[in-house]
Amino acid sequence: MGIKRYFLVSLIYMLAIGLYVYSFNGEGYTLEFFGLSLSFPVAFWMVLPVFILVIASIGHLVFYNFKDFLYKRAWKKDSEVFHEAAKNRILGEEVNASYKTDGFKFAGKMLQAMKFDPSLPSSFIEEDIANASAIAVSVANGNYEDLKKYKLSKENPLVLQNTLNRLKVEPKYALEILKKL
Image (tube, rainbow, N blue to C red; front, side):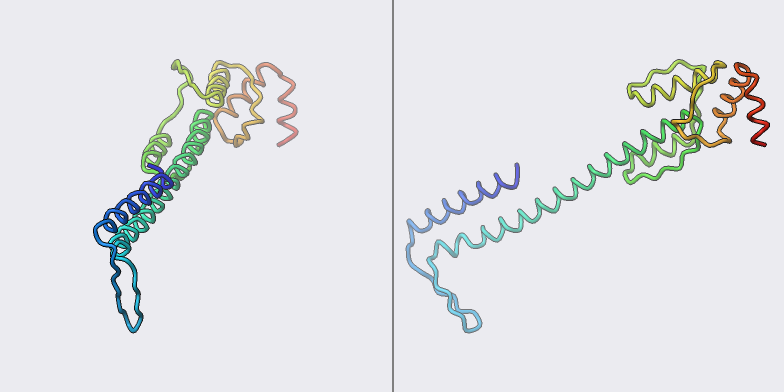
C-alpha cells in the first residue's frame, strides 16, 4: 500500500473512531500539564493515540522505502559494472571491480577467476558482450580486428594476438612496429 493511500485510509479510520466515540460521549475532558490546560472532547483524546501511531508508521514506511530505493540503486549500478567487467574479461583484460550488493560481490569474484575460451560455443543476449565475444573469437581464429574502440592495454593477450594476425595479413606493418621501437 502506498503512503498516500495509507494516510487517506488512516484519516478515514480516525474520523470513524472520532464520530463513534462522540456519538456516545460528547462531553469534554480537560488535561492539565505543567500549568497548561487543554480542553477537548473525549473523542479527540481517543483519536490522538491513533494519530500518533499513524505518524510513526508513516515515518517507518518512509524509512524502509528509502532503504529499498538505495538497495535498488546499488543493484542497478552493480549490474552496469558487472556488465562492463564481463565484457572486459571476454576481451582478456584484468577485472578489478568493486560491488556493493552481496550477489554481485560473489559473481565478481567468480568472474575474476574465469577465462574466456573462444573455442567453446557461446551465445550472449547483451549486444555489447556478444560483439566482444565475436571479436575475441575472430582474433583467436587468426583474423585481424580493429580493437581501438575497446581501449585495451598493450600487454593484453588479445591485442598481441591481433598484432600477430595483422602481421600475417599486412607484412609492411612490421616496419611500423620497428619504427615505434
